[in-house]
Length: 285
Length: 101
Image (tube, rainbow over all chains, first blue to last red; front, side, top):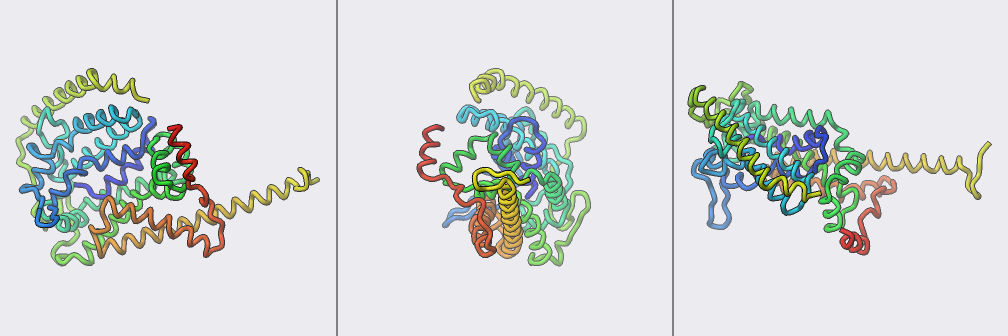
């Protein structure tokens, strides 16, 4: 899985999308697939109750499991629900884009995502770094920030910084606020000053960027196993972690699943759009 | 030849605007300093407290809290007028906007 990339890509996307789109929706979309699935992946204990997936990768990315949250169809359904409730097109578009960005970003690890679910449960992956959530939060952090995962996060940080204008007050008040009534609502509800509004907008960038440096420093300086868990920038690394790799089905099955997935997903999304989405879209502002 | 409007010359008005702009720029530079300090604090705290502070709720909330708390103090210490002072909507304005919304 990707770590800080999900926070940072939201700024990059909103800058380069020429449509009227909500930044908050892109951010929510970027976080959405992991929002309700991350806690059981690492394990969560409150009182005597522990919530932990037996097979983390299968729960997180597989089916049956919560892997459907990492598919394009889920993004479409969730965005339509939001469109039906809030009647806002900028939120619909933002959620679609943000969620799709998360789905495609997570293709980079060794487990990948079921992009075309429910038409196919085929996982798509380029295996750039090891999926290691079964090692727990700290094991995963050590593996991710010792591998190309950390480089991937840094790539998104640099991309966001190249488009630095997106963080200026002028950009925020001229482009971000007018596209999204949620900002005016937040201002009214919490009596926010201009400074607090801008800080809120920039917060996920600062947090995302700092997260890269803090976890990298932790992995290099404070990780108890830092002597063994060293930097490994090889493709699919790091080699010290017992990474999850899915069984390959062969190219024939892969192409067959992909063809079924593309046709099935196109049919499902078209049908949902024709029967429901179109009406909701025209009803919204 | 300086033109005058009432008892204030336009040159004075222009100088006054330039001073205001410079003060706002100074305030913004101080604010950038606060952001950098916040980022540094978050990294240092993150190394020691890791997921207690580096999570989707506490991390961004820490940034907002630091910037909104420390910036006015830093501006006061530097003797710079706060350009964002008075931008919080009053209760009456909020109620009015609520009705309009």
